[in-house]
Length: 268
Image (cartoon, rainbow, N blue to C red; front, side):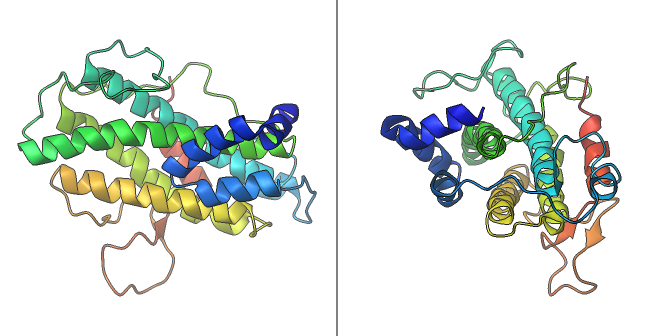
C-alpha cells in the first residue's frame, strides 16, 4: 500500500531494483518521475457517476484519474496472466505455474512445434514471447505502484481467473496469434482512455509510454506470424482523424466499454 511505496522511495536498493525492472519494460522515465513526485489524490469537477459508472462500469476509483488507471490495470492484469499462460504452454510447464521472477536463460525453453514458422521467425517469436511476458508483468506492477502512491483503491484480478477461449495453442505461431488480439486491444484501449485523464503531466505520460510499447509488441508479433506489421481496422474501431496519411496506422481506438467487452471474453 502507500507505506510500501514510501519505503520504495526511501530505500536505495529497492529503488534501484524497481527502476532497473521498469526501465527494461520501457517505463524508466515514468517510474523515475513517479518516485520523485508521486501524483496527489485529487477530486475533480466531472461527476463520477457520469465519467465513472457510464464509461468505466465497475472500475474502482475515487476520481477519474484513479478510475482510468484502474481501467488500464484491468487490461494489464489480463495481459500479464495470459502471457504467463502462453509462456508456460510453450515451455511445457503447467498452465498455472507462477512466472519465474528471475529467469536465468535456462528456465524457459521452447518445447512446442513452431507451427510453420521458419527458423529465424521461430527464434524471434520465442524471444518476443519470453520478453513480452515480463514486460506485461512490469506494466501491471507499475500501475499498481501508481495507485498505491496516491492511496487509491486497486483493481483486483477477476475472481475466476483468465483463459484463452479453447485453451492455449499447442504451437508457437498459434500462441503468438492468440496474444495478438490482446496487444491490439491494449493499443486501442490506451489511446481511447487518455482523453479522460485530468492530470496530463503524470498520468497521461504513463499511459502514452505503455501505449507505445503495446504498439511495438503488436507490430513485432504481426510481422513474426506473417501479417502486415501495421494494424488493420477492426470492428468497433473509432478514428482519431477522418483521414490518415497511411491506411495502417495505430490511430484507431476503442471506447472503454468496447475494450471491457473484448476483455471479458477471457474472463473465466
